[in-house]
Image (cartoon, rainbow, N blue to C red; front, top):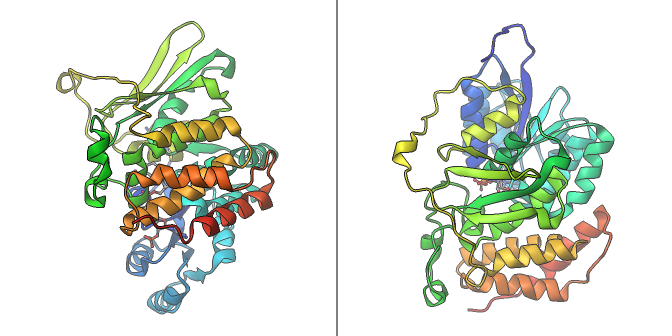
Length: 391
Ligand code: NDP
């Protein structure tokens, strides 16, 4: 419940405002105009939607990554007091925009890394959807967060669930966390079936509507692998404290098991607006009109062990986490490339883990990487796989 109309609004920069998380964040902000304002919006290429959002929300600045669309956006917003920017450096600048309190990172992939660092270094709190940032450089981000005294609030529904379960608990009382996974559209299928699945089939997630990259990651279960690494750095866990359980109904968003054997679960209907709101409103809970869950309609909540033979990406992510250093960065870059190749019909679905394993074996390992090493690793991996096409 919120009371005060005098409270300063939380100023939010939405990086990736035209995407699935970005547009849902705008819906959330629109429901609480007394509390939140969108001060910065950014897009990659979707100039039309960015312009429309800017005209409605009147932010202080917008950024379009695609330089060819800059003039179009600039001209369309010329009559409004909105700064229009483009270019890589400018994305880091808008992430550090003066007056912004919280930067919601909803970019896809490693593109989120440098803007997130820029935001942290400039004292902004982070509402983190862009899990790839923590996968690539989790140790470094954790240290920066400590140095600059900011907070990271998870947007990913599983991590939001863990975060909610941990409220009021000490780190020492955690025995393990249990990340739940829907299992994706290919749960229970055979290897033979997976050999020839199309991108249309892979893009049909049973419970969530999301951007293309994360939907393919969910189908391959790499999404759960990335989330395991994300959880390690978000919550400061040991590798063996992170468990994954397939739960096809996506009602339990994740759980924490404590040292006394007690388990807390956070549940609800699958709707990303809830974790988005919690990341922006923490530590308060605001009244919502979101549909309520009725347990009587979910009499059969079920659980299974993930099939890492059918979905090797999950095992590869665990292996990379064990190796540490730049291994998760290699996995992330190779996965981004492999998913984009699959979406362009250049490789088969089952080739995704093969490309990632190939990259993990070929790209030189670095035990204690710094930022320059992560950037170099990402570039080396992309160069290695640039010409790769199996079909
Ligand atoms: P979408 O593809 O729907 O949206 C991505 C957004 O980022 C768009 O605004 C896009 O612009 C922009 N963008 C993409 N690439 C770049 C780039 N290179 N430079 C600048 N901007 C870029 O993705 P989602 O919203 O689904 O996912 C965003 C992040 O949130 C991912 O890291 C994902 O893993 C995570 N996440 C998503 C969930 C979901 O339900 N969707 C759930 C949990 C986590 P444009 O529209 O112009 O292409």
